[in-house]
Length: 287
Ligand code: NI
Image 1 (cartoon, helix red, strand yellow):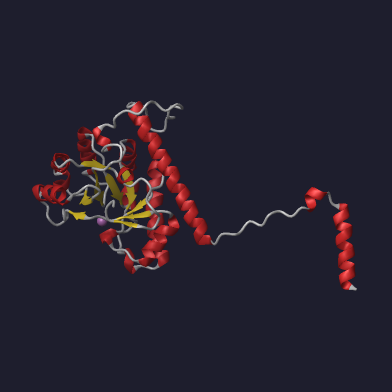
Image 2: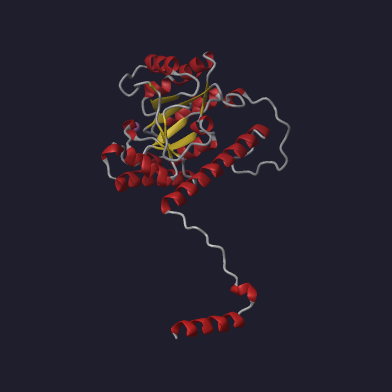
């Protein structure tokens, strides 16, 4: 009886509805939360990459164009890349990276990089970023990569997922406040990472910037040693670790850049060395 009534009702409803409205919509599979985050992270990366390429192109075509201006609509014929871009495929590129700032020495380092037409990456601590937003703005304007060195410089591999997330979020918020843009790089303090950090960075769509060349500049406050450690250790694709809070490290910058170039290597930003980093992945070098 019940079935008959239901069938009768269905027929009545079907008759009352236009055919189009009666047609079933295709089922859209619902993605699990982690896949959505992955996809969002990937989208963000690709957007950032496209933006970086537009900026690269724009700065080559119009060297004096202010950042943020629109790139020309029609691409110009390809010209040989200037040396500071490290060649078309960046085969000879090295990322020189500076942690723990920005601080009192950072402006002097930025002056040196500018004078040499070299690019670097700055892994900033959130409190320092809030204290020196003008330095982050300058880094961004001059083509350097800004990375997240967390809020309180704790060993992330000793923390819970939520604590790691908070450290990352706070660092990103500080960078975004200063520059209007987030970052795709996190540098775990002390290089201390584990599966929890992998997961948290993956969920947030950021990658882990570690290193293959440690200059030990924080301990060895000697510019010559810093320079020789950086230059002798580096190969194409290397990520070199230094700290822009030490005057001796900043003093070494000219020697590092000249020494790398004498080896046929070109110091570039991380965003240039690794254009499409995978969220959550640990990068010790390229390749
Ligand atoms: Ni550090």
